[in-house]
Length: 392
Ligand code: CMC
Image (cartoon, rainbow, N blue to C red):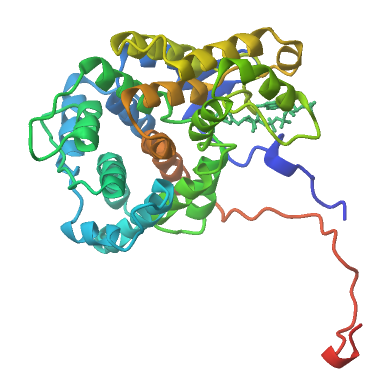
């Protein structure tokens, strides 16, 4: 005992060096490759941010056009992968299917899985960014028994996603530009967040030399939990459980009660102890979408607004610096767009894909060692084996 630094939850241990994302939690600062998230959300778009995360700089006009064309070139999935879906129950959780189908992508590209080859790494990145929305929409279509929709490469990333989610082969998709922009912004605001649980998982899996599709599947698995990406789904479930404004006080009391495991979902963050800069921009989008859809008076959204107000004023939350986080608002937007709650974390996973890839690529391109945390052993002392008939 005592040989290692004991840091459960990695609160004060840096596991790597990285040039991708900077966070100052106390000041509410989030920079991708040096650019503030607010400026990216307001002036850039998701695919440009994907390029930025991958290559380290914003693209020129030509680079951007080429990158978008390449991403569009890879939007379809292998026809054989469609059969894979039939092996799942229709009521399976979409994240369960995503863990499977994204991992399964490695089975289709075994001729370009040499991770020491720069070109192979790049093409895996393109494929993942391109195919995630296609797979995400396929998961949804499978759950409701509708035909899978092929991607449309004449549409933007956000528009195409809404087309594959809500379109049918029977009629032309009618895509609302305000909702498509909000989708793009949701993807953008989730694009990276340095060494969070899922990204650290991707790096750890990647450090063993596993292929990128397998590594991203491990990130999806880590993201699924309610303390991480599952929070946006948990927010909506919580709002539904509260059900009526008159029950809010009971839930606030439960959140403060240390004997009750209940937490107010969508509040608090491990790193941001002032405010979550992503939440500020997401709130703007939230207001825009609700206004566009005329949903300002939706009962669930009214509960959300009351909760937000209470948490910003109540001493318990203020003292512990528990502010609404990005998932609080993204959950509300997705609900308003008509995306079912079980799909929320899948959308987070889609948005986070370039971040996972950028971190994986950064690690693989530099000197790295297999990740291997140590432990403080607290089990039994050495003891002798007792044959089964002599055990008490
Ligand atoms: N509701 C009520 N109390 C809370 C909450 C909450 N949501 N979050 C933290 N606390 C309390 C906690 O009980 C503790 O109180 P005390 O000091 O009296 O014991 C104090 O605040 C500090 O909490 P912690 O658990 O030490 O904080 P953490 O940094 O380990 O956890 C968190 C961060 C995000 C897991 C946590 O705040 C939480 O569970 N929030 C709800 C889930 C959520 O919204 N997660 C999404 C995070 S943002 C998206 C992402 O990056 O994935």
